[in-house]
Image (cartoon, rainbow, N blue to C red):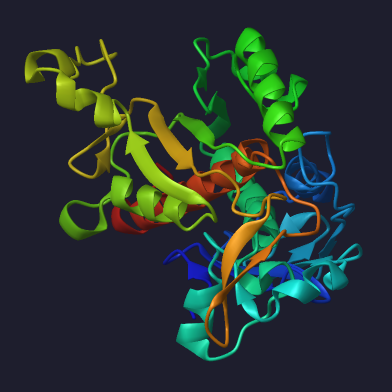
Length: 353
């Protein structure tokens, strides 16, 4: 089972949704980088459950424990281990699911692959696994900030409601994490509606990386956009990734989508900051399609482990829309992919950028 991401900036997550805890080991963090426990906790607070009425009401403080690799708030260059203990798991809510395979979930796939599975909250396939990613992403963000690279993100679509504006300063001011104040209100109303109907709704999360210099990434098989796409699709519930103009470019002509560069700035950014698999100095823009949450309160037909089907309503506490909590996870994964690309470029050229 692969639980490791990255080649030089290597991140390995561990733990299950209803186990004692979840966490991460980061190997490859450069030495001498200031590591603020408060900054890591801030990112985890953005991801944690129970933060608003439109997220799961599981109450986890998600207090991070820094176990190794940091001394006097500075990275040592050795593996950094972080742990978050589970304190509000209610495993009995999942007793009725032990002998069935939930539609849309990974239950059947896990059973077929391993011959055994942890049915409690989805076990390893739960979104709770992303705690480790976010903690690691906070380290990657700190390292990247030292070379002038910063990542922002937000929910830009929920159902059919799309954000028109991109004011990233607004993201943390509304529970949907939308960069458009007017759209945020409509998104929230839609999420509340599907929640009351015991259903769920999907959406799109957009990310922007600023300050990435030209030259990061590799051509052919290890393209930067391929690494980013891999990072995004490793997040639970993601089903599509587009970079720059993405799928919308298929309706346009090349004369419109070729980004003209005058040596100082670009007239457009259809390529999303990446050309030929290598960053071109423009902002890197990524959008991720997030499917509707698979755990819903409506009764559903489920396959029984012994054959046949039965109708079961999933108990427990779940998100009617995952997008608000995917935002910090997606930011973390983009930061991890960029940190890895940065270290490779530094090794190749022998300089910071």
